[in-house]
Length: 253
Ligand code: ADP
Image 1 (cartoon, protein in one colour):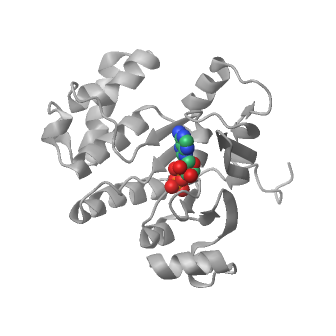
Image 2 (image 1 turned 135 degrees about the horizontal axis):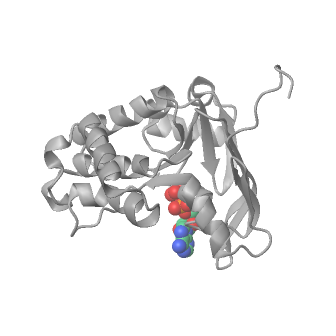
Image 3 (image 1 turned 60 degrees about the vertical axis):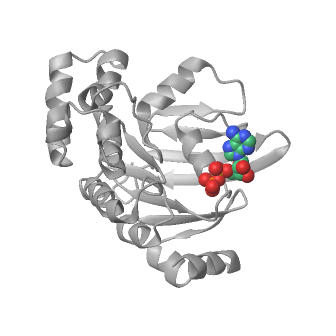
């Protein structure tokens, strides 16, 4: 590769299609995320953002298209085995809208479960890393609490620590703040901003356009299962070229 040639994106999606029954909800979606960059997926409810995100780590099986993360490429146009899905899942970690913590486990147990049970990492090593990460998000004192004893914002920060503990190549966020009371949103967004500054590669589905503007390198606007517009945040949010984007940003901002 010559020095002037840009590196291949870390995450690349081409021709992604997905139907539920006879309703095609994704019509040939493409996405490219360079290493260390942040892409925000925005768009009206039902436009397919979550389905794209879930397809990136095999939580949803697309009907066609290729998802590549690093040197792992999965082509959904032919039958895909569980091993390929597992390999794809190992490359990324998802932060869910509703946190999805195990209610019967403590905070510490929630965040070490994956590394210890799935990745077979030594327990003491996982505990040490968990303590370091919990301290970073201001939750050291919640280590031995159960999720129901935490606020939504605290639970979501635990969700983020759990994702980081998997040491993924890509972090995926599915509307990470939309279940939170407004006063709890800021702390979670601050953690995500810090991760962006540290150079994590991330795809974030969000309704928070001010946040998307601040954190994203690229904004992808989806509408009715297609990418209607993409570009730098200022271009998409301040000077949208497509009528549907204009309508959306003027209503939401
Ligand atoms: P968004 O994240 O933009 O709100 P989604 O990806 O959640 O959009 O949904 C896109 C479309 O797919 C919607 O019409 C939704 O109702 C439909 N859909 C999503 N998941 C399922 C499912 N498991 N079964 C049937 N329809 C679904």
